[in-house]
Length: 141
Image (cartoon, rainbow, N blue to C red; front, side):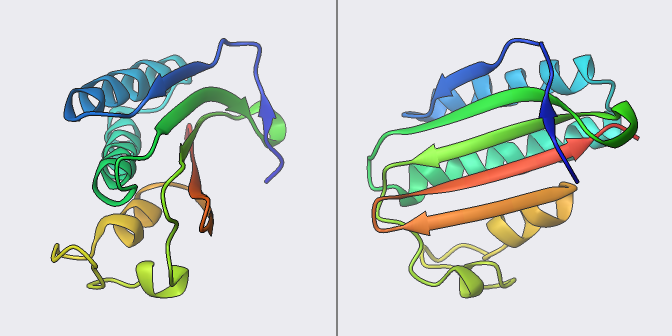
């Protein structure tokens, strides 16, 4: 779906410590409410975003990370929220495997990336040895 940024200001937040996860969730909640997402869709976006922010803390090996949150417009004027999570970490070695339920390099349940993908309407990932970028979009119904 073609996505266009709205005139609403973009929110940018560094992700460097556990306390930043709270701010990520608060920004996603505020932006999703402004875009007209229902409570269930707000919760899905916040859960996915929280998981992606936690992944930066867990897997980016102390590298810099951030999220950019912006309201977007899609086909027929439909509003949504786009969140772009970026880090300067070592990247994801096997992206296909990382998107498989149950796969984890940290001993967790392996539901982070695939679970996040199921919670949002769109998700793209690009990853190299210089870092990872994950973009998620949730549309108002």
